[in-house]
Image 1 (tube, protein in one colour):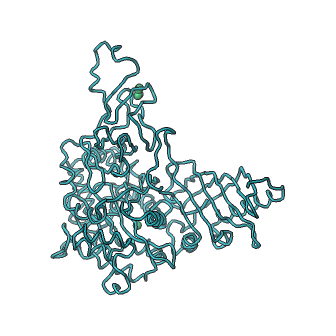
Image 2 (cartoon, each protein chain N blue to C red; image 1 turned 90 degrees about the vertical axis):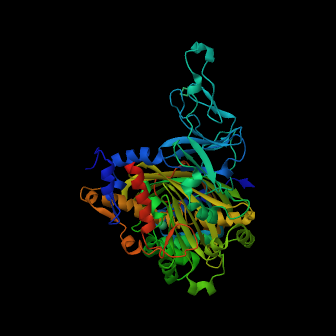
Length: 443
Length: 170
Ligand code: FES
Ligand SMILES: [Fe+2]
C-alpha cells in the first residue's frame, strides 16, 4: 500500500481517524498522496505569496512558489498585486529568474517573448504578423491565479476560481491576524528578503507544529527558552499547560502562550514590545486582543494549508531585556519528505529604526535556519521522516490523542472567536489542521 | 591603510585560521570563544539572485547570522552541552576546509584576511553529507593572548541552505 496506490475519498476516512485522533504515517511519506495534495489542496486553497510592503511601487516584483509552481508577484500599472505563473506561454522557460527587483515587464530569456506586469503578452520573437493571423495571442498571456487578495498586509492568491472570498476563507482567524499582524495604523512591514532552507520532512509537519504543538516546546525548546529569556522551566511548562489553544475554523489553528498569573508581578505587561508601539496597540486593537498581547510569551498559528506565523520574545543578552519579533513562514512542499521553508520577519511600520534591527536580531537568532529554535525543530522532523519510512514504520499511526481528553473542554466565554481549549498541550488544534486537510483530500 | 605583510606574519595568520577550522569542526566552542574579540561582529547575509539594473533593497536584511560577542557566548553555550541542543546531539561530523588565504596589514596590529571556507558535514539523521562554501573577509587583531577575530563577513555561494540547520559556524 505504498506507492502508486489510488486513494479515493473513503481512504481518507481511514488515513485520518477523527474519532480516534490519529492519522496514518503514510500522509507524511506517500508519493501518491503528495501528488494528490498538489491538486486537491494547493490548487484549491488560498496560498500566501508575499507581503504588501515587498511590492510598494509599480514594477516591484518578487519571485515565489505556490507549492511546486513558481510564480511572480508584481505590482502592476493598475496599482494592483498580480500573481503570474513563472513559466513562459511559449515553451515554458522560467520568465523571471531573479529573486526580486523592479521592472516594466519580463522578457523570456529563451526566445525573447515579452510580458507586462499583469502577465499580458506584449511581443513575440518576431513581429506577430508573421503568424498570418492564425494564432490568437490573447490566449498566450502568462497564466494568472484566479484571485489575489490581502488581509493585514498578507497577500494570498488562489488558482481556484470557485474559492470563497479571502475574508470568508480566513473567517474568525482575522481577529487573531489583526492581533498579531495589524496592530498599529500603519500595519507591518517586511524586514528583509526570505531565508530559505530544506527540511527532510513533509510540509504538514511544519504546518501542524505551528498549529500548534505545545508539548514539544518544553522538551525541544525549554532549555533555550530558559537561557534566552531567563525564565524558570516551571514557567515555560505552566505557560503552555495553562494557556489556550484556538481552533479558528477552516483549518486555521494556533496557541496563545501566556505568562501564568502567578508570575505577573515579575513581568511588565507587553514585555519585549516598544513602549510607543504599545500605545498604538491599545488604541488600534480591542481590549480582549490587548489582554492577550500584554502577557504574551508566544502566539503561534497556521493558516491552512501552509502559512504560519509566530510572535514571541527573546533576549540573547543575559543582562538585557527581551525583544519581541514577528516571524512568518511558508512550508513549501517539494516532495513527500522534503520541504522548502521560506522565512521572514515583520515589524510594526511605526517602530523606531533601532528597534526594527533589535527585533530582527531577536528573530533570526531564534526562528531561522541558524536560529536556536529552528535548528532543533528541523532535527526532530527529520528524525520522524527516518523513523516512519520503513515497511513496518508505514503501518503505524501518528498520535494526537491528547485531543480525546480535551476536545469536549471548550472554554466557555472565551474572549476571542473560534473554539478555545484550556491547554497548549491539547493537541486538538494541531489535529484540526489534519481534519481540514482530510476535507480537501476527500473532495 | 592596507599594506603588505611579511612571510612570517602570513604564516602565523594562516596557522591561526587552520587551528580555528579544527576547533570549529570539533565544536570546541569554549576554546574558540577565547579567540573572539569583545567587539566581535559576525555576519552571514542571505545571498540573492538579482538583476544588476533592476535590483532593489527590501528592508534592512534578514541575515543567517548577525552576532556580537554577547549573543555568540549564549549560542556557543547552548551548543556546548547535549542537554541544550537537539540539532547537535549527537554532534555533526564536520570538516572545515580553509583555502585561498590572502592577508593585508590594516593599521596597528590588525589584519584583513580573506579566505575561502568549505564545510563538509554529516548529521546523524541524514547520513548523506552536505557541503556549504563561502568567501570570508575577516578582521583579525594581534593581542598579548594571540590573534583574535574582530569581524567576519561570509559570502555564501548558495541561496537555499540544503540542510535543515546551520547549527555550526563558518
Ligand atoms: S520559451 Fe519563452 S520565449 Fe520561448
Ligand atoms: Fe518548535
